[in-house]
Image (cartoon, rainbow, N blue to C red; front, side, top):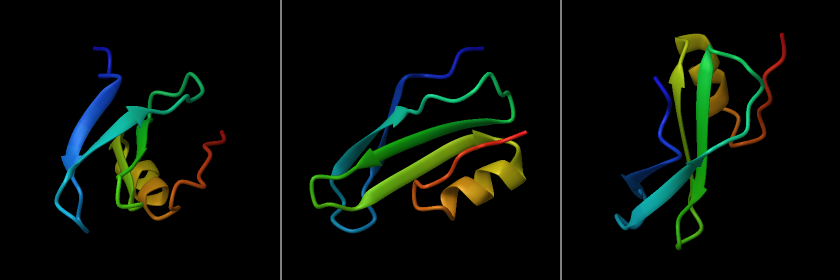
Length: 68
């Protein structure tokens, strides 16, 4: 199954819709990271995949990279 290229969420700060885009990743199946910035400046991160990889990505504020 292919991941969608963009997803839309509600911003936690201003409640507007914020679009997140699929990030370029290595050929790694344990995480599918998304990143976007709302019009108000709030960074929105989202990811699907292995719980530990997702958790570290969400805690990274977008400064995350995955290594094997």
